[in-house]
Image 1 (tube, one colour):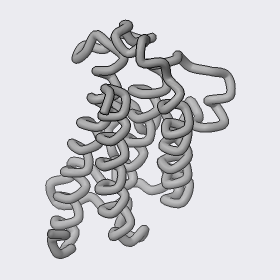
Image 2 (cartoon, rainbow, N blue to C red):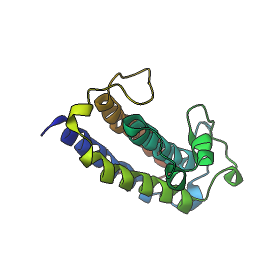
Image 3 (cartoon, rainbow, N blue to C red):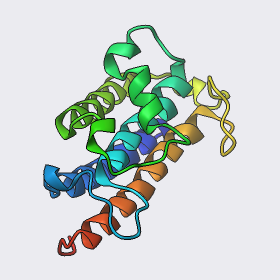
Image 4 (cartoon, one colour):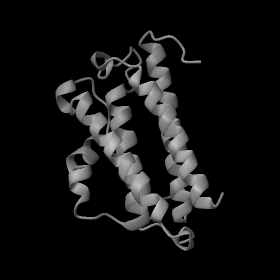
Length: 166
């Protein structure tokens, strides 16, 4: 496997895992915040979608005009870095709309990434990031970042009363 194939494999594997967790949670529970009051499922899923867009598509090729149809600037603002989850569902899109962006961004990543030239993976990302210096590292961080949030989703599931998945 070359480095692009490794990154693709990690992104796909983590997505299968996070999707399995997300699919196991009733939409009625998406905006519930536990007594700890830190986060909820809707924010986690929206944040994963936003981050995959920014870490893969934007940092590899830069933003494109048609991206607004894929993920709106409002969606990025609601779920982006520095946003704070609140327990008011009216602040957020409905679960089906969040899931639509989550799936569409991932599909676009899976369409574009296999065609990305290997020779460009060592280039700096189109937008800088404090944790990495190359486009390859941005791809690898995308998978790691999603796994970090999958762990948070798993914890929220348990706090909401769900049985462990494993």
